[in-house]
Image (cartoon, rainbow, N blue to C red; front, top):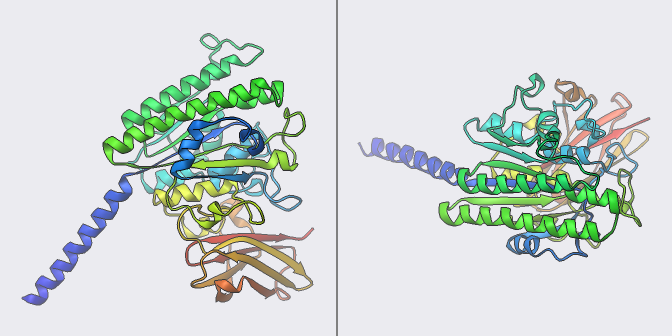
Length: 419
């Protein structure tokens, strides 16, 4: 009798533990915001009290876009390209959005919205955007290629409404749309509390293109900061009244070419220079110690961070493709690099946490990009703290090597593409 009672107690305890864990996760909410075209250097020249208040609750970091210069992942510093790098946690060699035309996005690299709705179909996702294509083309709502993904709420497309928002040469209609989008997002967040939301605002980039580094651009940044304050107030209200645990990320999609500040798209340091502001708790050393002689986070790191906060499960083969790492909590490996000489590949990395081993996987195909699967070979297993391994590839086909370093807390990947 006591044996039965003991087992029943264990079952009840496990059920209650799972319910408690689910309830805690159910309180987690995430909002990410892209404000267009503001380099880190230009941002720091302007007083931004609301961004500062959010950063005080979490942190601010210099960041980058554009993939790796002169390597297979080099990515144009163009708006839609940057948005999709955030959404998918991949660079352009994978997501295949090369410009604002969004000609042939590779939907085999899922956005965070698709991962989220696949895992939690009953939870709510929302988009508030000054550009309709963000939802219809990048997220790909309603398309067979995205599994007919749907948003629970969306507020966009006003740039096409020339009656209520007549287009003027100074783009003030975009400023008015941004205001409308922020008003709706703040109200909807406060009243409906969507689980995962994206807010996109355009006006700062328009002012940069028209006037460069100017009073107009500075004023646009100040206007953006006030808008972030309204979103922050809505989030704080939810947290105070409902006990929810909100994680906010605010970033930009590219910097601007100097000295004029009018253009972008290339690989100059100024065009690649961005930033991340967040209220996130548990920021790790990868975020907190960025800069100086340490690497800075990329736009691809935001998606897996939100994924961790919302407990989104990434299936193993899809996780192997992500180019970002979480900015919160424990991570095993960052900054992979690979060099091939003759029949050997030297693979290196930085170990964030020193405990545990890493598994080194290698595939010589890239069927994933076509919706297929790649056969990975386990090449080595060694302590993460070793930070280096030499692989003999003399018996493998030549030309392409896709490698994954799988650690205790995260994975990173690196390719060698021979020309």
